[in-house]
Image (tube, rainbow, N blue to C red; front, side):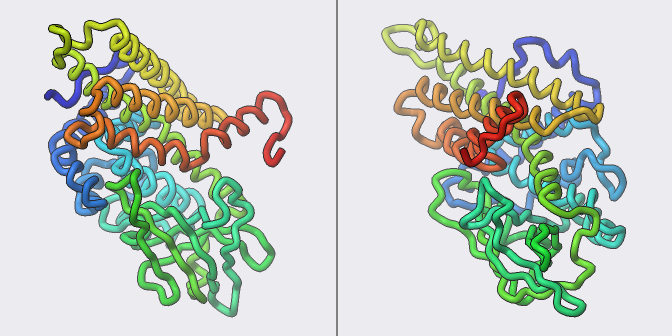
Length: 390
């Protein structure tokens, strides 16, 4: 069965620059040639092909919008298209790249010292080093301000104590960007290197979603790091929240890729599957599902294209990113469920990719701000009234 067909009902390709199209097509070719042949087994095994990080580095995927340090210096639409194509492969692949770019390289680039940037950014860009982002805790997810992890200064060191949970790339990361409260209760970012005494990781098993992705717990027990490992350029929740906006932007685009993969597969299946003497795609109810999918995908594409334009113009607002993340992930999850329905019993086996995307999108719908949290962010923006905690 053909894996992908073009999903561009409104001719959005014509609105893209040549560089944007070339970037997208290069990543699409790589995903189809190198990743799709192996993702099914990794999904079954609950593993991720970390060795592919070098390929992603060579393609300029990591930190694609940053300037210098070997980064590709692409615009935000091109970066979004990269995320779209990676998630057409698997949410775990997009998450791997999204964490490296938006949650590790971005804070080091934006808030790090010159020495921190020079030490980490070239290696992270090339995929020679991997990073993770430690914000969520066992008892604090949607309310990061309540975090309990502490970084207390003692002499010429910070001593970290606490636990972070649901951390993508945690056990394979060479450096963790960890958010913790200092002596004064103010949140700061700290770089903790793999192998530091008092720093340990434990992978989370038994996942039914994001199986082709490494998810870990980070534990800090009197973990001592040099004073120079604190990010000097930011204080307070602004730091981690600005990083989350970068990740949410990539997710909004990535979710489109997941939906496109499900639509492509379901359409082809509906054209080939014969019941009652004709393809099931000739039945009205099946066509209704496919029409809903292509319509919602098209709307999401237009939403993200405009969002990328606003981001490139320096005029994007966090609430606009929330809308795209909230809308597009819910759309993709609904599209995956419809695609699975079209495949009938075949939809539950991993011979077909739809069930894998459907399961993954349950996680994407939760992380980087749940659907409900983004609803409240937008609600506060349009009414001026805060419903958090109400």
